[in-house]
Image 1 (cartoon, one colour):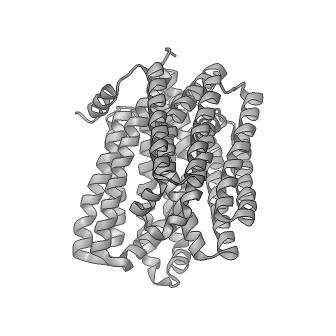
Image 2 (cartoon, rainbow, N blue to C red; image 1 turned 90 degrees about the horizontal axis):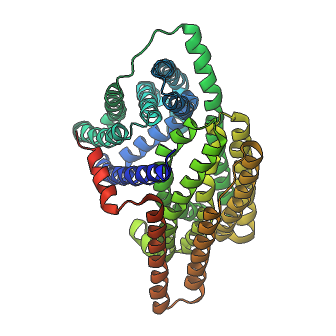
Image 3 (cartoon, rainbow, N blue to C red; image 1 turned 180 degrees about the vertical axis):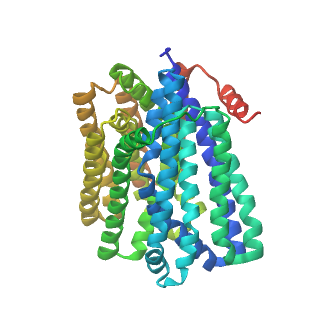
Length: 497
């Protein structure tokens, strides 16, 4: 791979899809406002219960094909074998239909249970049965995006995400306006169909043909993808279970109010950083999967992605540490100010999460489902559960934040050792340098803002944040040699016909 190409891909996809996600978040805020006005609090509650109840059904039915599909399609593209790409595409498409059908079946079977668990009455059973169509289109939509991501069709993927979000918003407004709460189910079904239709149109523009494939080959190849995907699905489910157990522990040993503070603080920390992580995976995982048989290239891609991620995330975390009280009052209310220190310590641990995140995908990209599941599904989640319980027992919410930092410190070391032993991966000196600089600036900010509360302190800390931005910009320039104007022009160019 040409020198600097990985850096450019990492920065461009992160910048472009980070911007797309910001736009989607703004549309989501607008959607939430409109739903609140048109449906009222009861309607919002019903809609929320429908969606949250079906998330697990969708996750189980997909069998993790979204990420395993990206891996297989990206590898076929890398080999520049059109016939293999068409065959992989065909198998994935038929497998997608199978998982969508599975989603319908599971939703219909579980409809009475979903109704009782969500609303404590069987009266919503028929609504959940109708929403089985929503589950099917949601699965198909996600798998269409998988094809776009695996083929590195970033223009089509960005258009699909933005246009689908916008059109689905325009669809639900008249439904909710004229039908009120009766329009919730049609609105959800219609939105998922619109998103699928837009993504499907973008995939069709790739002109990848469906080839004749035997049923046996579809089943065997589909099952092979599902085996790897199930490891991802189980990891996700275990992660959700761990979150539930931590929340329950806080509720039992503290209060619902303290749980609310914990969730709000965690959401603020992860919301901003999540933009970088989610946008990073769009370009990084297909690139990593395509190079999965070349350990030297894997190391190069993972290291360069880690560098870009750390350089982008460090200034964001520093400003969040400085402005945490302001952010809380804007997004929440003064009632949530007690989590300021919690958020600041979480930012410190997030630096190590940023360093670990690209490395964690290596085993999955190589198809090593056993190592991935043991590292991420069992080890990482169990470590998080134990650390959080001990941290809360010893220091309340701030103790959980400290445990979060310790958890990712240990996790980064374990991950580095395992990937070195199995795949020859080693972290380069630049990453260690960036971690040390990011940690140092974050620690200076946290201690200064806790122990030296004074207007002059805030001014000096603002200069530290500004210095972090300048440093990251200089380092990025040395690697990418591209100006912000060019990044903006390329982002704009993506949405031109």
